[in-house]
Picture 1 (spheres, rainbow, N blue to C red):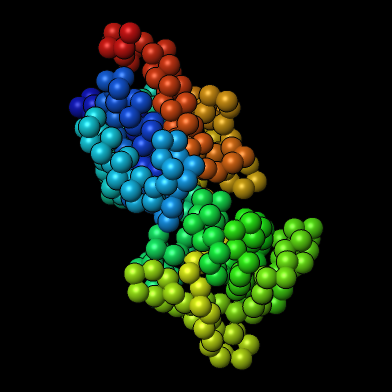
Picture 2: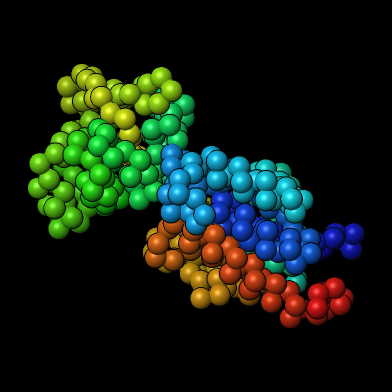
Length: 318
């Protein structure tokens, strides 16, 4: 049972990547009481070495763009709670979000928890993230024009990264920890026909090295147990994604086979009052600018939902 003393937020937003940040700004401009629960600020955008497709900037780094996001949020005095959201549920007419050891209540929820790339967990990876280590070939391939790069992984995402990179550089190494590359046969055949792609199967990255930026990687052969080095300027990590739906969701919430939240064109989920935006959803393209647009759409839909709940608004929203 809810205690009478509980004062719920108008909306809780889970995640502070481009989708969550945009949603928070849109709702703050509506003078709503909102809370953003997140593990970090910026999401995958913070991991991008360079962004050339964000409107208004010919070139901006991920960390620089996230700094702009942060400044925008501060201007609206948006409240952030750093933590790991673990469960979303509903008690009577209010939603609750459990994050670490706290429980928060709200009249609506926007899930913008995105997706997280599986890290290599090797020495040098964190140090050189956004300084040569990247997790988005579509975003960062142009930055490495004419430079040697290594793609880590052997599935479809790694194959796609190789094709993206092939437009900009003619020195591509592939480090794959299985006996052969996987992925779709047609894409794999296309990649293997490229004369400047060299594949190292049964291998894994042991370390990333450099000074201010990446200069090389150490590679471990899993069969011979011997190490060798590759001189590269870019390391593209494509070994999988963690879904943002690791959060325990209400049973009414519908997911697709990839565990992405199914939404309609208004970012509404299958449970009224819960909205979703960005990479955590079933949208086709996972891009910073698309996630931001989805965040705006989810916020406007949440606002319309709140306006319809007059018994909770007490005339606040007009």
